[in-house]
Image (tube, rainbow, N blue to C red; front, side, top):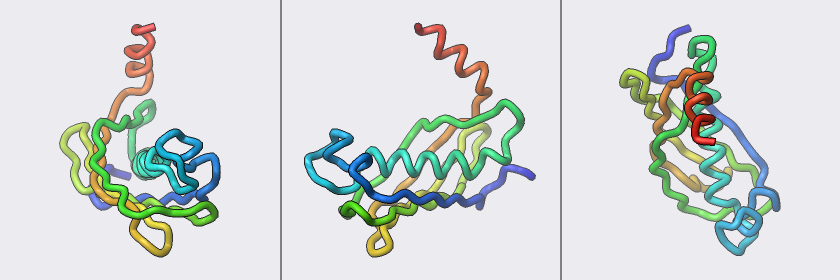
Length: 128
């Protein structure tokens, strides 16, 4: 299997108190939090390409340009979809979208970078 444009991913999460704006500190309401949407988008993107990477490789998020356009109350399900649209060396660019079954609640672009997991972790550990 080769890493190539067109790879898609899809992940869903139910909106609950644990991923609400009130609980996550991004607001005061019982609605799906923007940080939770971002996390779902990132998870969807990395999981979509992981099977195509070499042993010991992973990806890290490096850039995110996403709008959060509509609120979603507790109890609904959010679905994130990603599509790999560009490969530039180790840089991967995804078009991303999140919806709640009624509205597209967010959309944009997300970039990830292919890394060697062990070397990246060692680099981070040197800061401690």
